[in-house]
Amino acid sequence: MKLEIKELRKGNEVLTDDRDNLISEVQGLQSSNELKDERCKNLKNQLESHFSEIQRATNCHVAHVGLEPTSSDPNSITLITS
Image 1 (cartoon, rainbow, N blue to C red):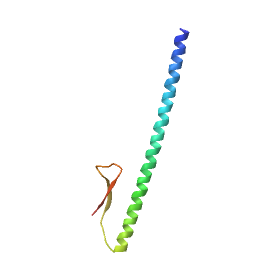
Image 2: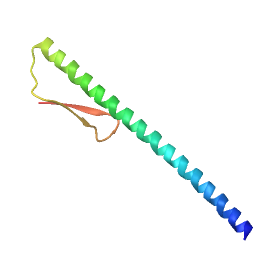
Image 3: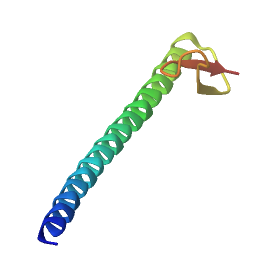
Image 4: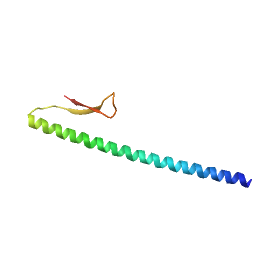
């Protein structure tokens, strides 16, 4: 009986450690995603700002500027103008 209790306690400790490790990993991934989202947002704002400067400098008008993911490469974007 005592051996069984020790084994259960040890199993519980292992499960607790595994849970804690998974929680840490998820939190790290969430932080990474948040940083990437913020970076993408900043890059989009910079691109729109630079595009507006180009429009003013060239006296050219584009009604809409947008970005969308490129289907072949999820890390790249396509500039859409209209």
